[in-house]
Image (cartoon, rainbow, N blue to C red; front, side, top):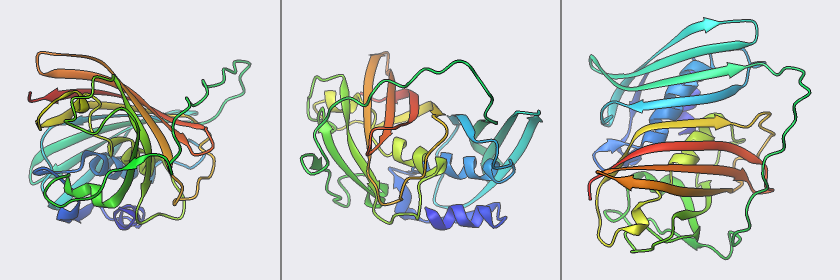
Length: 260
């Protein structure tokens, strides 16, 4: 992933995605979102950190060539609104919107709720990478379950989560890495199912908690998702990601299609 991000930082807008990032027949959505985000990030000054990202997954991104088309929609004194179309051929495969905003003096200060207690990384159960059994992209992450069950384990819990880190760690985690770490987890409704079934994100929104303090790239982050409802083949879930020392990094919300 880091090589793709660096290519974007160096000014490239056409990338060739390899098949190690597959999630079924499509490229892992967290990578697609991160690349679209990075294409916008390099156009916006560093004094305006990312505040929120919304992603619509229009179609499956196949391995191979993709083109990123970022556009600044509006640039004000404090806030920048941007979008990026992720293209294959002439088709838009994903639309990524991002809001960047400079810090302001404010009398309003509300601390985030503390990270809930969960078993440590050493106590959690790591998801092994087994080719042909788990999605191909999982080989890039170490994911360890601490809350709820594995997918398709008939676990009734609404909650699912644990610890996640990159196997090939970047020097430091930034917002693009956070996007990928959040989306690495399967939809939180899948552990409720008894047998394997396909599911995918329809829309996805992430809000970053700034300032994002420096975090070494080899550090695990804690993740916890809650399934809010499921009906008519769709589900809704909310999630949070924390640093290992308990700082809230991001809030996530997904609309999910479930083929079961």
